[in-house]
Length: 227
Image: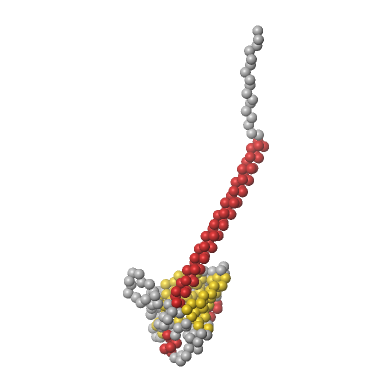
């Protein structure tokens, strides 16, 4: 009598060996490492682009503010803080501009130029002049823009300051007089008939602004004075 056929045996399931697991983990770790490096580089590049874009906008805004201020320069002297005399419509401190990273021993901003400008916007209708007394100063590597809430300020008035641009290594000005000669300070001694009243109200016909930044280098703007 023939024997019954025995069912075929399934081959025993074979698992991964320890060496195979170690190799797989090593390959996975290498792939993760490569991916992390690429992702980190992409994020770094994105941050650099964002920082450069923000810096460009800051530089453009600073230069535009300077241009708008000087374009609207007005021949209006102001009383000094103690009220015993007047300051010219435009007055400079060329030594401060040469200092570059200027600041006084009290760490206060060092004024480079002060002048009266028109066109001070007044959207809420405050009772004040449309003229504004503006001062540009250097402090700890930054260009500071300052103004008083009133035109003829007193020691009781608080100056309003804001940092216009940082990483500044130099800020200097030149002024073109009526004879088209460049002057390094103002009021200029070359003004015809230089009596006190004329000097107080004298204005240049143009201003050359030189701004030195440690990351963008030299920026020069020639600004024509309106009127």
